[in-house]
Image 1: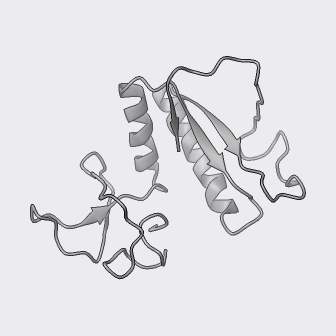
Image 2 (image 1 turned 30 degrees about the vertical axis):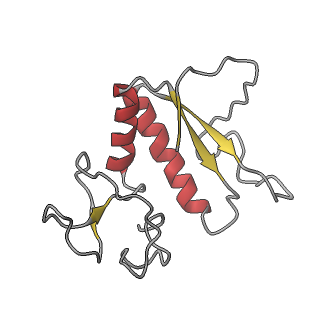
Length: 145
């Protein structure tokens, strides 16, 4: 839950366990998570969002639609590692939110260090389609996830 917010992902962010570089604006999120920081200057609890919740992914794709972002790149790393199941789940969430909000997306694979292509990635894999279309023009405005 605190993957990007703290050094020890199992614990809430705090002054001694932080990876926060800029405080997030969480006003558009209905699902947020309490941290171990003091209250903010306006008296509200210091809360963060989780990129793993369906609501967060949907809000971010709604923003893309609202602000004219044509598409998003979902970056994938080695699925055989500890992050594999989380990345598979995120890909499914991105697909749902992108389709709901009419935003295109593609998956960008960082294959540095890979020695083999994962067997589980076949046409019937978690996304059910993989297109490599270098000949098509890129959308004019893109977001990176």
